[in-house]
Length: 264
Image 1 (cartoon, helix red, strand yellow):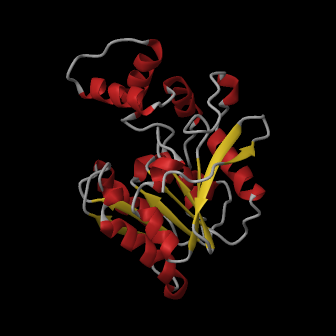
Image 2: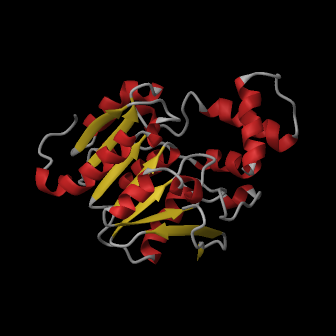
Image 3: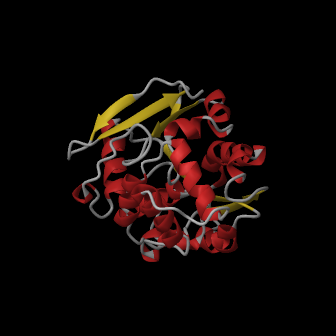
């Protein structure tokens, strides 16, 4: 499912976003994580499961990622540009009744979009806990160090986790400089803004993911939040069959549940 036709959306500043879609039926905009892409997301079991069950899964490549524009001009990465891009993209598609989901940085962006006024019928925040509200987490500086080393051609300690990540970045064709600039554009999301979100929201995290320690608090913050833990860590949880099953159940059943109880 990785050879999907790629379409283009021009942002207001001229940067083009690439996007692809699979399936037909109810639209679900699905956002990938840091250093990911729509094509990589499409290769996960979640996407074919959703498409088989009546969803048109729309997967944009975020600015600086995948086949989208990857400018190295810092001026092209103003504060909150990813949210600006996605609000414009959703408007461009003319979506007024749709669902929204994301994993890892994509889940962080879903929270940002909800805080900015996006009102999907249902939202899915995958692989995130309460630290997703911050502009940075305790992992951000580590990402920056590796990205800067790759972009600048610097060596990292042989055999270290940072060196392994750098090798993966090079082999995957990730634009280290562009992603570094993306990190600098992220803003904090006030908790108060999420307390006003009316969309039922699923927070879904691997039971071995360090982010899971505060995922319950994140779900409880949202007025119609719900938490599901699935087997796996941050890397493997998305591929767990239980992940796709939980998302499908939430999207299909949430309209009938009333969502009267926040939290878990």
